[in-house]
Length: 425
Image (cartoon, rainbow, N blue to C red; front, side, top):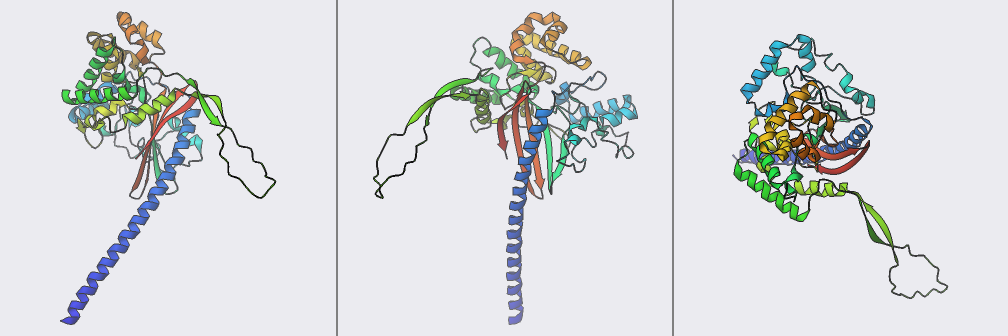
């Protein structure tokens, strides 16, 4: 009996010790994997910024004979699947291969991070060469509705995946001008304050956001405006700044050193503060606890392939204008609300139909196409663009159970790329 009890105790001790050792090992391995993910993210950031710096402005594609991305957020899962099925019934097998999402998502295998030509030419490669034989052409769910640039909205190019060592890195680049700028709600211009409020209400109504949530968000953003006044354009400023002069070192002739106190000599220099620093401050405020963005993150549709929520269509990185060539319908209506609620719907629909045939080259062309709304468009002119210059680089690095995510907001003007903010999680 004593031997049996002893064996039970020893077994329990052995199990406890084994569990502790295994837990300790798993914890250490997770820390190593997470550190490797951090390093991979840092490398991917440098790579992505360099790639975006060298890449020309993304081109819009003609989408005249394909389903439009502008209203996909309104479709229930049943309606969405029916849309894909109807589309599949109308197109050829070659077109199905062109618009299939298989291979476009992560899973193209590994890519050599040092071979920049591989990703620079990603849109020119036949990425489906290895899967065309196994593709089920009757499966409409494999189709992907193209966005304004070809990949799904709001990507400006196909998402890419590659390995850095044992870490799998995924990169997406989003068009932030295709989303509603949160900063508009901070504008302290009485002439357009009501129009801004109406536009935000319209967009939130499309996303089934209730009035109480809308009110809470507006109140939170107004508190931000009290901390950091918002402007559509921030200019570089020059301010005087005192800087200490270097203190000359002198050898004393005697070994005795006498401690003396003296005033630090300074000089006044003019320091240039870039306007983008204000955008950095705004990005930090938008992602702080001062704004309860979780209220807008509630999904109205959540399936294996789709997640739709209001926050998906709102830019929290300082973008100040909406691109009429890439914004979905409810964002367009919010932009055209500056011309009045009665005109917003018709203006948005006209833009959607026209840009499918040919994207707008500039605002003058837009005015010609919307000739019936010329006066109304003039009221919106300072809030819209036809080319985007705000982007977010979204990087995810995964190794084992460790995962590191980073979002880098950048602004590109005159070929120069400026980093706005970096958020990690």
